[in-house]
Length: 355
Image 1: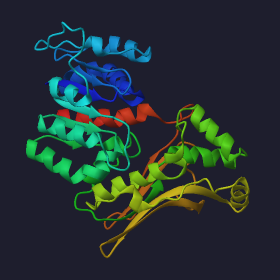
Image 2: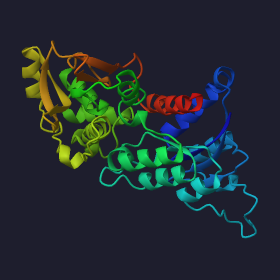
Image 3: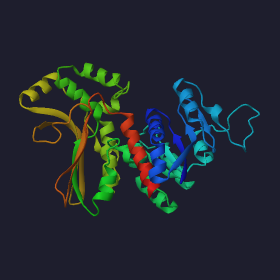
Image 4: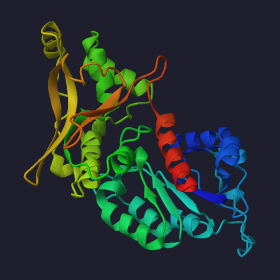
């Protein structure tokens, strides 16, 4: 089957996904009889492009990576280009006119409302597209609505990359543990803070460790979401919202970040054989859910103790299997990043296509 794909957001993750799709093009065809064209792209800084017959993706890469506008790639017969302007002026135009079967939504995360990602996904589903996202915002703020809308339209809303990048968290619990009741989970869900705490344990100051995380692209210029715990909080909210069908916002998680952890505290913990980790947790007891994101001391008996640098992981406790852990370990020479997140998006696409 041939799929037309559109990309809302064309940053590092989306471009990594396109590279992965290109690398796997032959095996997609040979193993699953799947072919594809990219028919729409919306960017935050480089304009919008639509061509239902397929965009020149290499040219799109060249334009974006050289800071130029991609609107010149638009080619859509019903429109009159006499004025020299593209008729595609926003993301919703791209969704509407791309003739896509699948939309990948990767606009910037809005932890407060989930917008405009919720509107993007709603529009795509209403037009008969599958919707795949790495964006935590619409998972937290629109999961019930969007899942119901997808079912009504006979389409899929998938978001494996929203937590732990390419590691299968939602799909494992959805497909490998039918009717299992999750009692609790605990883990490290933010790689940036784990890198910072690991490097502080190695003797760096907080400022030095943060500068390193920014240098390798894990931390933003404004690291607030990471170091104050908001990225971890929205991931906890996403897990609770999906796995327990209990809508939760990051504000309700009320996280505590790592700014208050000093080198002296880390040295004292190290001497006692313990480590500070930004621990994400949730527990369901008698129908009530308690959640938290805060620095905690862990010892060698904890699965979290050995998760260093950019490694992340989570342990689920269920009524049928006591503890089940999913760990995304840092590879030598790699620090995590867009490639892992891109794989989660790719896996969602392949699973939709082959079903």
